[in-house]
Length: 178
Picture 1 (tube, rainbow, N blue to C red):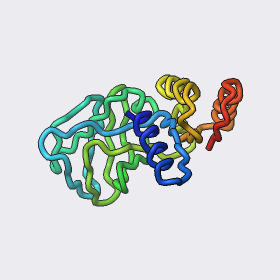
Picture 2: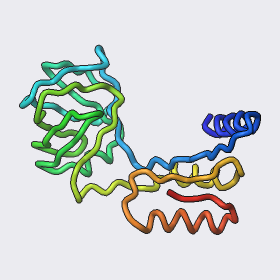
Picture 3: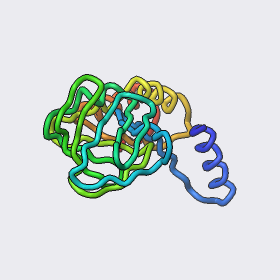
């Protein structure tokens, strides 16, 4: 789908006599809330206890917020007192963490929407910058002339960027790396 869009944008730009650079983004490891059974959005008051559970979906309400996260690796990064942000500003402090489940406290009133991104704040959180999917995507990006720039999201180290630049150089392609 993304490749088809890149080709379409390139064709349209050509028809309009415009230059168009196509950026391919390697997402890195990311965590998202699963689905809330019932309402897709819940309001949660400051000081409320929230449960993170390892699941694709969960019954969740303002009175009993349960936040499903399908990627089990998320729980390996959690530590007591870690700050977790959800979406555009819900902020929680982890109070307890165990395998596949965690408790947290809302630090201020907030709205939680299913499907939103979840981030763990702090120097100990170092997500994998290049997942196996990213490496497969990189192989595809370098096998076609349709991409001009490769962007790396959530870079964990200088080595991540150098690794991608080395792969680009070995491919013989002239692709910039951001």
